Image 1 (cartoon, protein in one colour):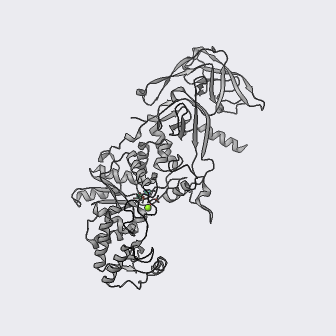
Image 2: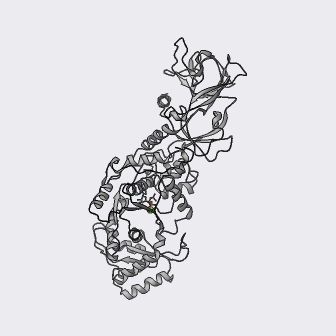
Image 3: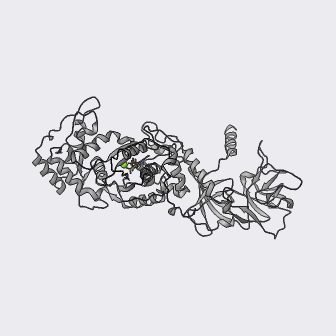
Length: 576
Ligand code: ATP
Ligand code: MG
């Protein structure tokens, strides 16, 4: 598979037998058995275009598209665009790009705003049936009249307007005769219902705002509850899956469908994805973007699909993660480490290996001929023999990681130190003989000798062993690169958890981005294609950022390899 152009990857539906079942799948199977919808499975993914999609949406997308595909059904992409003030074409475009990137193809592309005329006609139908009325109470009054969990609501004084008066007022609401908030249209259901959503919910509000698609045609807009189920019904959606917070809305969803006598779409609820150290709310992510706390929606620290893509996540890794997370009827929290596990697992299989030095320390091999360069053979991917090998130049002056040398090695430190021999991967065994220090006493150059009998990094004939293998790049051939390292965006497992009066931004991690401007990478990485992914030996997985210029690549670290040493070292540092 082509790692540099993920846009072309599509998701194949696994066969029905290979999938573990869940309550959503069981519901579909049951409906197929009873032939409820004539053997049809039609789903939809209904994002509101008020932000970029995040990993939580990926879970919904995988369910909506995955379940339909499994049974030969179809999935529409429908923009739920009933809040003109928050919605923008930029978001519509990004959502389409992200759904495609994730590997899914929609059957129909729709907008709730396509249905505004039909929804208006249905509102009139309900008024005529005595099931809806225009209310003059303010939003505040409506809230007060709604009652509490223990007390029933009170009827609005406008609840029993005549049908004629309601028709006239609703028509005039549409004609723009009244200011924002002056009146609403409400469904006439039951002010004493134990379910708040049935206490005469608002169907339409007045809002003199331009809409990204319908412009100034409308100054009244339907609310979610009056738009969603009917949109499903128009599209003959059989299984409408949404998150658990809409469970209490289901009776209303069904009420509108029944009263209007339209196609009986059915709503099912599943748990929202929550991830530790992560916020999955477009509103809050928008706040981070607007306030410049991150560098845009596709900042690699963002949990958005565009951020994860830029970070180096593959669609497969995200789909596999969503599959493993599954669905349930209770909301919990998933470890961020689980998401990272899936990207490691996928990239391990597909990412070519390369050598890069993030914090360079110069090594001079005193007994290596000054003018010589050798081409060392390096394996591109030990997990994939078909990936072949490449040549990496080796010469007298090299760079290694500062971390791979200690003048005074701590206990259990097996890498390079004075008198110690280590293996340079694909290179030679080298032994540290001396160091050069600057005026401050910092080691700036390490001098070694090499053993010609260990060419390729192989063990010498005398059977001598070393305890450590380190990576390197040849100084004369190295390409300068910028590398961006990321930590969790938030320091708290639950970033919403704050002291009274504080906002979630207090939990932002001040060290979430570290830019290393003077890295050295092997020459094969001089001008890699943006979006291509590599494993830098011993350092992790990295993805080429679109900020790269020819000869000046920029890499984002997707995820580190598990580095047990770093953990030990951090702990001992803390204990000092
Ligand atoms: P947000 O609070 O981030 O804006 P939302 O639910 O308002 O989320 P929508 O654009 O309305 O976002 O969502 C489109 C679909 O994605 C809905 O079916 C919604 O239930 C689902 N969805 C949104 N967030 C999650 C999540 N964290 N986990 C699973 N599904 C989600
Ligand atoms: Mg929403």
